[in-house]
Every structure is written in structure tokens, then in C-alpha cells.
Length: 501
Image 1 (cartoon, one colour):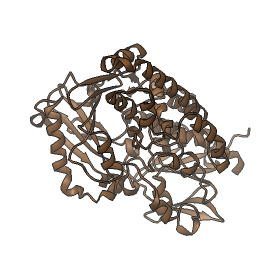
Image 2 (tube, one colour):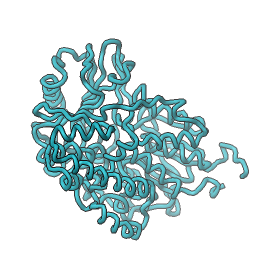
Image 3 (spheres, one colour):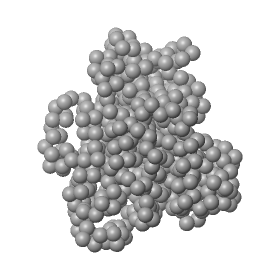
Image 4 (cartoon, one colour):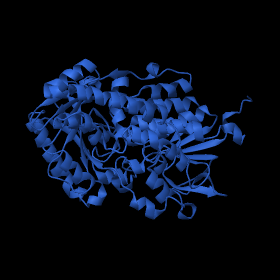
């Protein structure tokens, strides 16, 4: 193949530098494009932005790394090894799940240890648990291995899938599938919470998302030393190694279209940047409602976007303590007094409830360098309704934070209120204003069956040529494996750069 000088290569513009955008940039660079990534914030990462204050390092968003082979692929495309640049450490337990009454379930990847944990809660459910894991493995084999990076561009692609979906019980919810195998309600909760990691309600999300249980067992749960930001930095270095560029403080205002094809973007300051292809890692609803002018849209009209069901949002409190809480695991899930009804408040009623369930991240359990010596770095996350709840977060944020601090102090972080030395918050309003997430939904469209695969905004835009989508709002969906897989789809739908030469 004739060598094309970097400055003469066809240009690809990527809007947004979340994991989907960064992975897309690496794959496009490997396919011969000259890549420019445009990021409106002052540093790359998107939801994986890194906050640093008072000597503490806080990963803003993703903290659970599974399916590391998807990252290894990106490094291999550049002739490099992930392990040479990023130190991934396996975490065990994956999660420590604490019920409201103080009971604890240690969720690990060890099959024998998991059987023992299940037996300790309900001996009669051990066989059912094993049957559920076999079902999860089969769903993983089809849903992740066979379909995770397959573009759904025609309704016939979806129609061909229906028999397998029916056979796998995908018309059931995750919770209903778990309930088919185990009877103890506590175990049903333990085995069904995973859709919340990708913005879904376990009582509504298709049981296809049960594949996460086997995905974790197969590949483990990992943490990048230095924080998730180390992966962002590593990917940014790969892009530069390929000759690509990341421009921060570059706010895209419009996707430019000529002859029914995307041909570049216009920035908020009026600068036009030409490109042969445009890839949007922005929220899919924002991409269509705000970046692509209405006259170029037939399917994703404002009305259709507004009719969609969107994921919950998140209240996230980042804090550092002057002492270490050595007994607290890396990942802890603290369940509140309600499960089904709390999720109904969040997803259906769009109501900020008085109670909550929490995910507590203590990265200094694995990497002490993320806090000053003798200190701990934390973030605690509470699923909350998106902005259709009408909650006034300017007024509610601090009282809500105080309630969470009291709950943590009364449970696993004794004396917390007196130990805090640094603090910051992120509310649904920040997801909307800072990350441009439609309605402040933290994960885009809610992952229900009728908003999955072909029903989701396509990786190759249905509206104009040469426009492509990656990230949580397109196929296959949210979560680190999902957004990395969305970039993988590009290999099947984006032409090699040589076609433009």
C-alpha cells in the first residue's frame, strides 16, 4: 500500500473524549485517518474526567474495569502492550454488598466461594444459582461475544435475532430471570443489581444484561493503578503516537452537512473544521437534538427524542478523609431498606426519595497514592431520577449529601463527619450542564429491549452519510465494555481511509 503522509490523510473528527471517543480515535488512526478529537472540557475523559484537589485524586465516573481484552486490542493496534503503560490490578471481592440490616455478601469471581456465600444465605438456592450462572454464560456467549460489536443497521438484523432472544428469555427482565432460578429475595437482589451499572432498572432491563454476571466471572473486575484516569492518559498517548490530536476547550456547536453527508463541524467560536467523516461520542440525544440541524433529521426528530425513556441520573459525592478506613473494601454496595419501590421512585415516578442505596468507591484500598499519606479517597454514588423529577438540586444537594454522610457514619465509616478534609459534589444538573447529557441522564437511553440493538441510535447514522456514533447512547450501550465495543463496531461500518485518498 502506498504510504500517505500524515498531513495528506483523510481527516476524521471525533466529538468528545470519553472512552468511546478515545477508542474510536485509536481505531480510526489504525484505519489510516488523520484524527482530531474535540473536547469541550479542559482535559480528556468525559465521564472519566479526573478531579484533583487538596492532594486527593478522584475519578469522576467509571471505576469498574472489566473485559480488559478490549483495551489490550487498542494497544495492539498501535504495536504496543497495555501492560507496558497501565498497571491493571484484579480486585477481590468484586463488591461487598451490605444489606440494610447489616448482613454482608462478598461477591467474587471465585465459583466455590460464591457457592458458599449463596449457601450461607439460602442453602436451597445453590443449585438455582449455578443454573442461573449457566444461563448468564449462554447469554454472554450470544449477547456479548456474537452481537456486542455487530452493527444493527436494518430491522431484518433484529428480526433474525428474535428466535435467539426468545430462547434466552430476553423478554423477561433481569430480576425476573434471576427469580426463575433463586427464591431468596436477598439473593435475587445480589444477582440482579448489575443493570444499574449501565443505567438500567433491574425490573425493566432485558435479561440480556444478565450477561454481566458471567462477563465479570470470565474476565474479573480490575482497577487501573493511578485511577481510571491512567487509562484515559494511556489512550490519549496512543492517539498522539499515531499522529492524532486532542484539542481541549473545543466546544462543538454544529455538525456540518453538504450533499446529505457530514463534512466537518463548527465550533462555538465559529471555527469550521473540515473532515471526511465525523464520529460523535456526545450523548446521542444531544448529537441529534443540538448538533445536527433539524432539516437533516428524519428519524431522530425532537419529538422522538423527547418520547424516549432515559436512564436514571446520579448524585456523586467525592470526599477525602484525614484517616484510613482499613476495613472498607474497594467497592461496597450499601442497600437501603427498599429495592423494588426505590427503583420505581427513580425510574417510573421520577421522584427523589427519602431513602437511598449507595455505591461506595474506596480506591485507596488498592492504590494509596490517590490520597495524602494516612488518608483515604472516596466517592459515593446514589442513583437518583433524571431532571424530569423537577428537583431543585441547588437547594437539595447539600441536605442530600448530609443525609448520605450520616448514613455512612452510622454504618461503615464511623465518625465520618469529623474526618472529612476535602469534598465536592456532582448532581444531575452537572450531567446536563457539564457533560451535555439529555435530561441529565447519566447513561443516555434506558437499556430496555425496545431501546436496544436496532431500536437504539445506530452506530452509522441513519440521518446523513459519513456520520457515526459511539458511546453509551448507541449500540451496544453504556458501561466500559459497551462503549469500547461501540468503537469496535466502527471497524465494520467506517470505510478505510484509502477510499478517500
